[in-house]
Image (cartoon, rainbow, N blue to C red; front, side, top):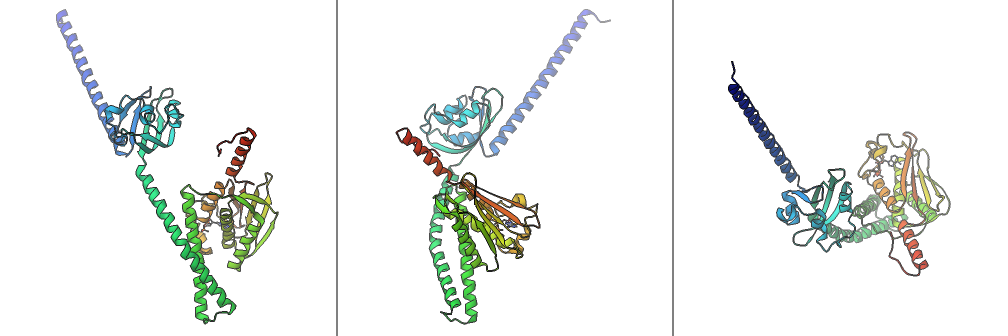
Amino acid sequence: MLTPDVLNLVLAGALALAVLLGLVAGFRARRKHHREQTHFFQVLDAVGLGILILRADGTIQYTNGLASDILRRPDSQILGKPFHRLLHEEANVDQPGAPCAFADAIRQHQPFRGHERFVDGNGRTVPVSVTGMPLGADTQSAVIAFRDRSNEIAQGREREEAFAFISHEVRSPLTALVGYSGRLQAAVASGALDVGSQYAEEITILAREAQRMREIILLILDMAEVESGRLEVEAEPIRMSRLVQDEIARLERDRPAARFTFEGDEVVVESDERYVRRIVQNLLDNAAKYGGDAKAVEVALSEDADGGCRVTVRDHGAGIPFDAQPRIFERFYRHASASTHGRGLGLGLYLSRRLATRLGGRLTFTSTPGDGASFLLTLPDVYPENQARATSDQAGSESGHSQPMQV
Ligand code: ADP
């Protein structure tokens, strides 16, 4: 029979055991949590990004080693600080209180991705690529991940300088090579120079390959300009009908088998002639290359409702297979069947579309496999940046004072 004392003792023992088990479980859970947290932070350090974790009030709760390195501040100068003050406002780069898209996004619980300039502990500006992800719906709690772009920018600048130098150095010998080999070929063809049949053939090959090399190098130089994002547009009035017909005549000279028909209005647009020529050339080249011999390529030019122009190049070749259609504007893309039609780099359409977009226009196509392809280039009547400048100048003169250019 259990006496009350023994019963109390048993109950107390059971309670103590439960408390002990609870403590052990709690301890294990905390240790597991701590282990997981440590792993998590190790992963963050390993991904090569500076990481800051913000509390609900926007102060910094966690920084990894790389963030401290990039910001050149010990953890003690980072933890607990309001993120925007630490990253931006202590610097001269941004006026305190100036609008900041990055800080606004964090405060409005929106994701942010872009390039920013942070300030390190020595007061120097650090260009960074940064992503901010909100963690809570109504707070500033967020993860900020960033990468130092200083080396990348310095290397990019070196590359650009080297490229500008090489491009300048390459253009002059190339022009001489194409010019003189073309003259030699013309002299042989007209009988003004008699070099015998074998040399005559070699001179023809020399002139053709020099011309091709020039085209490839100019294409690569244009590509590099487009990719650098610093493409200079010099817009001037272009008589489109003349430009298109010039290019048709050039191709008919270079490819005697190619046949074109042209139909068009006289349309004048304000754009960059060099780039418009490059797009038209590419469309005509492709139509001649992939269009087959059965029917002539039809080229049409018309004015659109807003005074811009539409250039259509329609061929009657094999067309573009459905599997290739989503990809033909990709860089270096060539459909497997393309090589049977001649040489190419798979850059023409990529570059043409980028140029068309840069000029405020569009480049699109339709194609039914087996029934050729039709490419459409549209260009606005005035290059948009010139239009914006004209509007802004007009606003300035109407209000009686000049205004900065709005682009
Ligand atoms: P390239 O002609 O040097 O290969 P492009 O960028 O001009 O490069 O064209 C990309 C690919 O699109 C071509 O390889 C070809 O497969 C396809 N393509 C372009 N124009 C035509 C066309 N008119 N008809 C059929 N296929 C075309």
